[in-house]
Length: 105
Image 1: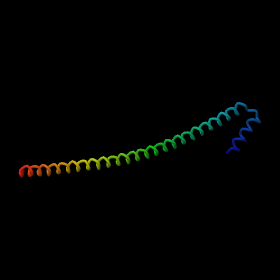
Image 2: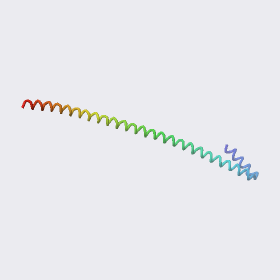
Image 3: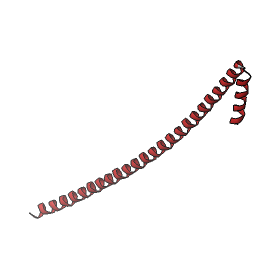
Image 4: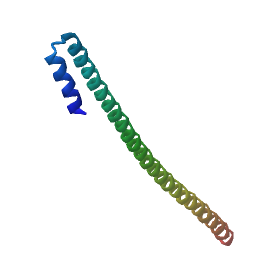
C-alpha cells in the first residue's frame, strides 16, 4: 500500500503537476489525521472501560465493608440486649431476695 502511494507521489512530482500533488498531499494528511482520531477514540474508549471496571471493583469493596460493619453493629446490639436482659433478671432476683430478707428480719 505504501509503495502504491509512493509511486503516485513520484509520478505527480515528475510530471510537475503541483496542483494535483498538493491535493494528493492534503488527502494523505487528512487520512493520517483520521487515523490518529480513530486511534485516540479507541484509546479513550479503552480507558473509560478500565475506569468503569475499577469503579465497579471499588463499589464492590465498599459494599463488602458496609456489610461487614452492619454485621458487627448487629452483633454488638444483640450483646447489649442480652446484657440488659441479664441485668434485669439479676435485679428481679435481688428484689425477690431483698423482700424475703425483709420479711425474715
